[in-house]
Length: 253
Ligand code: C5P
Image (cartoon, rainbow, N blue to C red; front, side, top):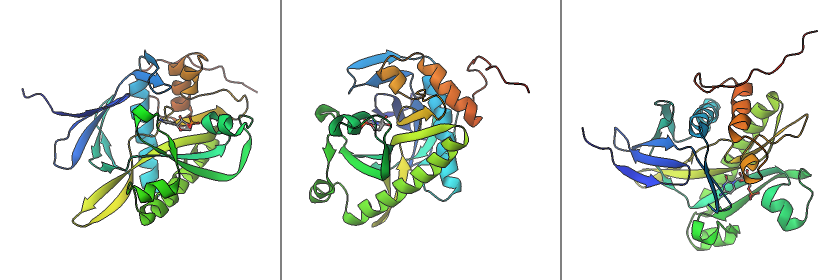
């Protein structure tokens, strides 16, 4: 049997050559990293949960007309995706101050922002993904002004969708990161949401208790990351059958 070709290995995922030209198989690892890979661990079951959750968000986005790279889930850890040319930017959308923004501006974590704020980081692990202004993005040719306008529109639609879905299950979408890819058709390209959307790349807080249900649990040693992600999957009704979870007590009137 021929071994499949690995195209790229990142911190949390591996990309293999797909069955058709223009496709890739995206494999979700259990590896967790934080602080630019200074902190590392293997968290059993994380890849399975993120595969399911990313499928859930990507198919939901497609159902409202937001293009994504997602084609279909193949198994517990793998999904078939369109091959794209990744724009080397992390597109971050924030609804509440947290993380690097709270630190940079001395803001209280959780302070509401006047409107969703979008920021861009240049994807480069060696440089620690530095925040970059739009001026740099255009001057260095990472994206055109038209691309940037389209990226902002896409990011805001993703935010509306994700905020609504999460609100429906009692979770506040504090912020998230997406990556955008180009799909070329001769001389033209269109932009799609690529990579993954999962609790690895979002901040998700329980609306009632403020409990963190995202990768900050790992970054800040707040407990079990699998329990947090399982809770998100359970609330969204996408819990894979072989991931065990403790039933929560229900209030009977
Ligand atoms: O750390 P910071 O506050 O800038 O992160 C903003 C959001 O982007 C968080 O939801 C975080 O999980 C996500 N992020 C990410 N990958 C990075 C940097 C940030 O998914 N490399």
